[in-house]
Structure formats: C-alpha cells, structure tokens
Amino acid sequence: MIEEVLSASNIPASESRFPDPPSVTYAVWFDDVSTDGPDGINRIFTHNGTIELYEPTKDDAAEVALEAELNARKLRWTKQARYWLSSVQRYQVIYEFSYIVKQ
View 1 (spheres, rainbow, N blue to C red):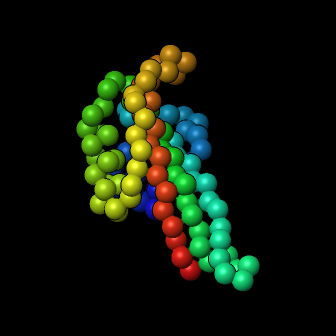
View 2: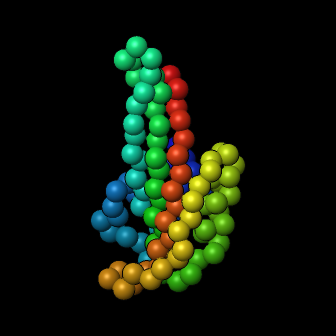
View 3: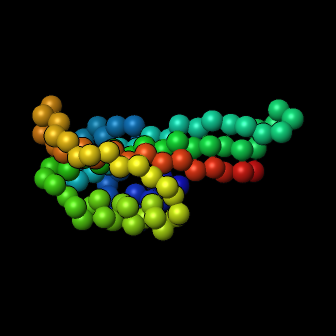
C-alpha cells in the first residue's frame, strides 16, 4: 500500500534508501510488520509505515499530495515538523501511520 500511496502522489520513492537521490523532492519508506491471529495462525498483519520526505526547498505541494493520498485511503497518520538536515542539505518531513491486513 505504501508504494501505491507514493506512486499516486507522484513522488519518486525507494524502500529503505535512495542510492542516487534525484534533485527534486523524493521519499524513502519503511514498512514494519507484526502478525497475530487465532490458534497460532498468522492471519492479521499490522503494518507500521513510515515515509520520510526529503525536500530541496520547502515543498508544500508534495506534502499536500501525499496527505491527500493517505486521506483517500482513510489512513490515520502523524506528521512530524519539517526540519533541516545539513548533512544532505534537505528538509525532512516524516509521516507515520498504521494499517491492518486480514487474510
């Protein structure tokens, strides 16, 4: 689902790292999964997603697009305040959310 959100928001993205990041705003995403289910059978998968948005300049449009796609999927999300990473010369905004998949 995370890839679907990022694709629909037209933000270049890569899982875990971006070896050769583009000059435009891009995202790195993570998907931590835990399992549960009755009788020891894993049928409930809880995904804890994180999207790290890296912006060369403040990119409100990218944030609005990403938030619209998260909202369209009825995901509850938390957004951390934008801050400057001097090591990569980018602003970073982090989004965190969870969703459950039942099989």
